[in-house]
Image (tube, rainbow, N blue to C red; front, top):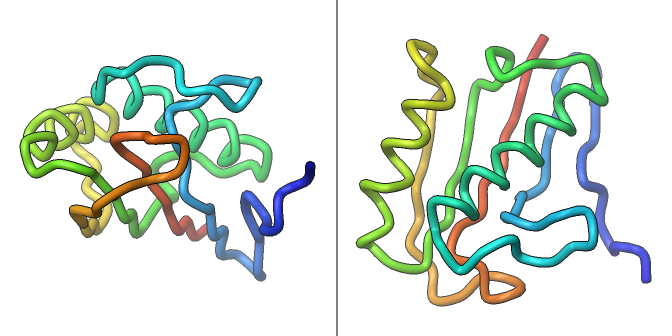
Length: 112
């Protein structure tokens, strides 16, 4: 079954990336661990960036969805590790549930 949405859309010099979960190539969660899921979601985000010849420093806005407030510090630390000294804008939202019973999801907007 194909997805009813686009994983990413490039409009002029702006790349809009749909929410990425911590799933593998078979679209299965890689782990129950929130940190492992978030790392994989970031890897998936980076793959899309590369497909469009963007990189993580082109990201200007991220939105992160987590299913428990306790995940905030874990996700925050990995966000720092991933972006190093670069600091895109970010919103973090605590939600009741995510697809595939994931614990974290990230979406992004990048500009060249």
